[in-house]
Image (cartoon, rainbow, N blue to C red; front, side, top):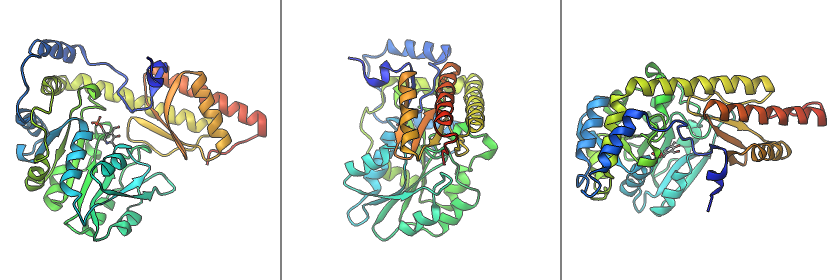
Length: 349
Ligand SMILES: Cc1ncc(COP(=O)(O)O)c(C=O)c1O
C-alpha cells in the first residue's frame, strides 16, 4: 500500500536530503552487505572513535545511537528522573521531543517561539524550575531554521542550574558555514551540562541508516551510554559514516547546492510577498496565519503532489532538488495570484 508520503511526487515533509548516497558511499555499503550474517560491534566504540577523531574530541565524549532520535531517547532516559521530569522546549519543535518525553514519562513544557520564529530564551529560562531535568535548544531550529544569536546561548547557560541538562540539537549544523558555528569544545569546557546532538540523516544523507551521536562531558556521556542497546547499531552505520567522511568534498558540494537552492527559494518567496524567517537549515518555514490562505496553499501543494509538514501557524518545506523547488514556487505563485484576484492583497503575516 502506498503511504501519502510515497505517493507524493515531491517528498518535502521530513527534511531529508534530496540526493541518494554518493557512488562511493553506495559501493562501500554494498560491500558491507556481504557480512550481514555477522553481528555488529557489541557497543559502537569504533564508530565513536571515528567520529571523535573527525570532530577533534575524545572518544569518551561521544555516544552513538540509532539516529539523533535514538540518542535523544537515551539522554531523556538518563536525565528525566522522578522529581526532575520536566523537559522545557520551544513550540513548535522537532516532533520527536514531545513524543520521546512522553515515552520516558516526562512532562513537556512548551514555550512559544518569538514573533520572528526564533527560540525565546528569556521565556524558556523563566519556564525552568526545580522540576526541570532537561532543556532543549535547537541550532538551527526546526521548523523555522533560525539560529541562536551570538552571546544569547552563553547568557542563557549562565543563568541555568547546572543540574539541568541542556540539549543543543545541531541536526542541521552542517548547513551553517564552519566559521559561523558554535565551538563545541569551548562550550562543553565552560558548560559541562550541555549535550550537543548531531545526525548523519540530514547533510550526510543517511537518514535510512539511522546514525546520530551526542558530544558531551565524559561523565554525562557515560551516564547516557548506560542506556545504549547491545548490538543496537546495524553493520552499515560505521561503513556509511566512514565512506561519507572519505567523500567530504563531494558532500560539501551537495550541501552548497542545497543551501543555494534554499536561498534562491526564499528570495523568490519574499518577492511573491510571503514573509518568512531567515533559515540556516535545509528547510523553510512559511507562516500562514490566515486559515483561508493556509487552505489554498494546502490545496495547491496537494494538486502538485508536494508533501510538506503542516503546522497550525504555517508550513515547513524541505529544500529538495531543483524540480521540487520549482514546483513549490509555482504552487505558491499561483496561490498568490489567486489571492490578489480575490481581494487585491493578502498578507501572510
Ligand atoms: C532538530 C532535529 N533533531 C533530531 C532529528 C532526528 O534525526 P534522526 O533521528 O534522523 O537522526 C530531527 C529530524 O528531523 C530534527 O529535525
